[in-house]
Amino acid sequence: MAAFNLSDYDSSSFILTGIPGLEAARIWISIPFFMFYIIGLLENFMVLFVVGKEETLHAPMYLLLCMLGLTEISASTTIVPKALCIFWFNLKGITVGGCLTKMFFLHVVSVTHSAILMTMAFDRYVAICNPLRYATILTNARIAKLGLVCLVRAVLSILPLPLLLSRLPFCASRIIPHTYCEHMAVAKMSCGDITINMMYGLLLVFIVLGFDLTLIAVSYGLIIRAVLRISSEEAHQKALNTCTAHICVILISCTLALFSNLTHWFNQGITPYVHVILSSLCFLLLPMLNPIIYGIKTKELRDKVRKYICRM
Image (tube, rainbow, N blue to C red):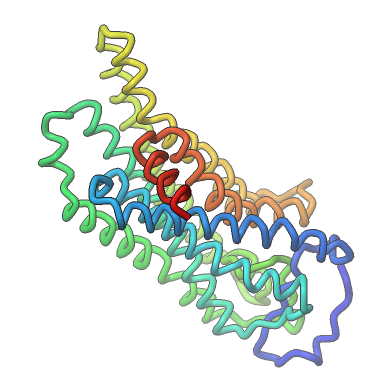
């Protein structure tokens, strides 16, 4: 790891190193960071614009897609600008308050993202297993309330993290080998006992995310059972097509999120820069890939986006 002159920074600050071990290549690394971020912003803002403009898209599935896009824009905007400042201008310092604030916001958005994926699975379950009552069960107003519940749950579950960190004494060396302030990365800078932080972090992963994944699995189990009862091959294909995009997004999201979280506790044999790159990609690839996946698999959205692109 490169040496840093700690006297250049305030004693109440942390230092984010970027990607440890790859400091010499930071300019080259910044190129995909910047490109993925800008592409993700453009794609998600396009989806938000098209759904907002087209009344035919004012339906629960598209409202949930907009909520998902907002969480992805928020997450990437929380980490990428600071990462680029590190790569381009060597601005590594961040105050403790700023670090805890960014950490809180990032984790709130991540938990909200997980909850919205769960809500989208429930939406697909109702659409396929109870289509005649879909319009009455999932109204736009009810979707808005569910989105608010997802946000409130995230805030309440993440609020203890900065409170637990603020009680800890931090060591003289405050170098965080990461591009952003992550809970366990900050906790490991402490000279005190971080057992409670580790236990609560694991509790969040296994209870909050585990709860979401369980409900997603149950929803798709019921969907598969309902699809298998359909005799028509065409109906089979149509039902499965409505779920393919969501399944792809879930697989990508969960794989990256679980890896990022669990390697903080079980990181033996994992090179630090591999962990940092993959955890950063979680917030770079999803905003870029998700609109493409939904655009390819959702004909109505694809047609509307194409219409506006042609006008431009």
